[in-house]
Each structure stands twice: as structure tokens, then as C-alpha cells.
Length: 239
Length: 389
Image (cartoon, rainbow over all chains, first blue to last red; front, top):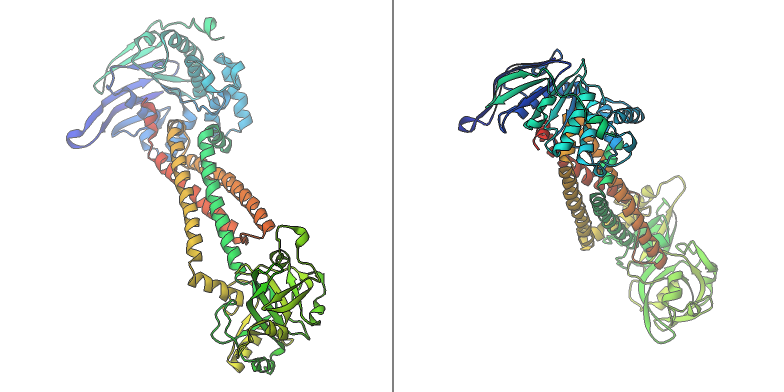
């Protein structure tokens, strides 16, 4: 699980100093999708970056599946990210000159898996997200929703225990957002995996198991949802 | 990751082509200009190479092969008297005017050699016999002279042939042989005759001997023999190898003299430097733009766990790849230029192996500079920035 305790983070010095995270405590468990929500500038992306190990915090502890991120060296943290974390970015960040399957295989290549094995595994996971027949195509030939499905496949291809998702529907229209979240919930949710999604898109809140609300650098509320939205768009739209 | 790096590079066709074009032009400018410079410097030593003897003894103030401070005829005997010398012969070398059939004049590089031994004569005869130089009023000319001394140089049927005649300073010269020879620095063709006849072709003066050519005795090196000649006669004795680091080599001394005393190296060097600057400017600017364009993708790779080292290696692979391709194309274009130059006989072109090797290193240096700029930019990019849309 992910355990964030008393984390502080500020940017700038002196009068320009901004305290972005203030004694933040948060737990995200395996088998659940947690959404981190709140207004723009409340610190949710900073917290997500800290949990992802891409940003050092000023104080506090972040334990990700038993590993204390603040004690790791830069190199160890980089290796840890490559094996333990799957990333889904707001703008997809697919490399336009690579095929869909090659994009998906990148986390495996980073781990040192051979290109042919990476391609096999990429194609297998592309099948799961409904893009098995389009593995050779370039990302720019796909719609926004399809590109985000490729990004989901890329985040899951190396089977990471933690998936970090930054505003996954920000670049999608409402309908595509629902399709993607439906699919994401179906393929990403697993008893061995924790999923943290940062969003301010309240239309996708129903897909969360728990919602942590942030405001002004603090977690102000953590709410469990008894009946998260069941996947229903996948069969209708993904194929 | 090499495949990933190359796909990212080749996928951005416009920048890839711009990079290759920049490095292509840089390579072409550097190699072509350096080779023309080397060719020109080689032409300055043409007389030494065409005469082709191991030791060249000249007046003590002579610094390079195209400088003639006449010596006394008795200097031949003085050189012969040196115990380290196996043989020594007189040599005349000078520029003379030839009157053509149509009454026009051309300059030639006249070389007079010992009639008995024919030492210093051309080594690659194409037609005729060198021995026929012993006949009255005869000369051997090089292939360039067959065209240059023709009344209609563009008409192959009008080329000078064995048996044809012309006048050198109003004295008849009948062609008995045609040979291959390196072009002279002045552009005039080479004409060989005997030493005595060369003096007849030349307006007379008190001292006419240009040099004494010699060879060492068996068991003694040319350097040792040359040193012995200098010690015994007070004349300056040069050895004849090829351009290198031996200051007693006439080729080396001649080339360095032109490098130090003429504006030729500055002229060519400026173009080479421009080639370097063009390469740096285009390659660094374009590669940096390429990195900036891909920064969010590279940042995403960094966030996903790719180390700075591997990302740097990707950039280095990309830079070195365009460097190799640009260099290869540039060298190919230079080879095309070289074939044309060698076919036409000009401009001078000589590409020693050091030129392409140095150009390759320069191009790779440019690429490494370009990669370094990208690496610095990328290392400053925090992986967390990828979350900021």
C-alpha cells in the first residue's frame, strides 16, 4: 500500500515561499481506486508527484509497498519507478514516431526486456484495451480516447503494483472520458494494485472506491464510496 | 533503447534532414578544402617528386624546392668528393618560355639532367625512350605538355606527339618521349632535357647549376649522407622522402615554407573554420530544437524510470548517427569532386588519410557538442514537470 505521513512541500524562499503540501497524511490500499480531488492549485499534482517518486518532499515519509522513498538515492528511486509504478499522463505523452505497440512496450524496454518480448506483451495488453488490431499504427492515427487507452496499456504492461494517473479525462470529451474510465477500472483494478487518480472532473468520481479531497495543501476529507460505478461502456464502445 | 532512439530521430524527418544536411555541408567544406590545400602543397614539391632522387644538394640559403640560388658547376665535383656519396649529378630546374606553332608563348618547367646517367629523369614513360634524350635538340615532355603546348589544346588530334617540335627561347626542341609527371605549382608542364642542352635553352648567366642530385653509398642512410655533405661542402643537403616531421626533408621544408610565408593556409583555413562553424551552428541549433520538441516525451521516459545515463546515451546515439550519415554523404560528395578534379588535373586535390580522419573527429565533436546541449537541457528537466500539462 501507499502510506503518506506528515508530508510537507514548499516552493520558493522567503516572502515568495509557497507551502504546497502541509502535513499531508494519506493511505491508498491495494485493490482500490483512490481519487485525489480538489480545486486547481490545491496541491494534488504535487502530492501525486511525491508519491510517484518524481519529486522530493521537504519533510514527512512516503512508503510505497514498504519502500521509504525519502531514503532512496536518485538512482534507486529511478529504478523503483521503473518497476513499481505505472504512469498515465494528462496529455498521454505517447511518442508519435513509435507505433502503438512500441509505445506500450517502453516500460519493459526500460526494465531491460528484449524488444521482441516487449512487443509480444504489448500486443497482449493492447488486446485487453480493445486495440489489439491497431498495434502497428502511429498514435496520431488514433482518437483521443484511443490514445488514452494506449496510455493505460503502457501503464499496466509491466504489471506495476501502483498506477499513478494524472487528470486522465482532461483531454477527452465527456463520452470518451467515461469509456476510458470504464475500461481503466476494469483492467487496472486488481487485489495486488493500488491506483491513485488525480482529477477535478466530477463526472468520473463515481468510478472511485475512495475520494480524498484536498484544499490549500491539506487533505480535508476522505470519503469511501460503497458502490463505485460498475463498468458498462467497455462492451459497447471499446471494440 | 538504441532502436527507440533511432526511431525518434528518423521519425522527425524535417529535423533529421536538416541535421544531416548541416553535417554534410560541414564535412564537404572541411574535407574538400583541406584536400585542395594538401593538393596545392603537394604541387609545390612537384619538382622534387618528378626528379625523384634521394638527396638534393642546393645553395646554403635555399629554403624550399621552388627557390633557385644558382651554384657553381664545380659544386658537383665537391659533392662527388664526399666519401658518403655514391654518385652526384648536376641538375638544372627553371621556368622557360616555349614558342608554339601559332607563335604564342607558354611557360614550362625545364629540367636538365646528366646526359650520361640520365639521373633525375622521369620514371614513368608513356611513349618513346628516355635514352633518346642523348640525341641532339631533344626533349621529353609530360602528358600535360601534349595539351598545353598544342596549338589547339581542346582538339585531341592536335596534341603534341613524339616527333613534333617547338622552340624554347628560339632553340629547337624535338619531342622524343612522353611521360607521366606531377603538375608543377606554377601550372606549367614539365620538359626534360640534358643538363648541357638546358643551359643552351636558357639565357646564359655566370652560374647556372640549380642543384646537385646525389645518392648515398651502400650502408649509409640518406640522412647520414646529407649530413656528411653539409659538413664537408657547406652546401645545404636535403633528403627526399615525403611530407613528415623531418626538417631535413625537402618536401617537408618546402610545404612548411609555403605555410609560413604565403596566405594560402589562411585562405583555406578560413573556409575550413567556416565549415566547422556551419556544422556547429546548424547541428547544435537543430539538435537542441529536436530535444526541446521531444522534451515532454523524454521527460515522460524519465518519469517512467529511465535513468539520466540511458537518456543521455539515447541522445548521443542520435547525434552520432546523424554525424555518421552526414559525414558519409559529405565524404561521398567530396569523392565525386575528387574524381572530377583528378580527371581534369585541377584543382589540385590530395586527400591523405589524416584529412578524413580529422574531419570525422571534427564532425563527431560537433555532434557531441550538440548532444551535450541536449543532455544539459534534459538533466535540468525534473520528471515531476511531466505532470504539468
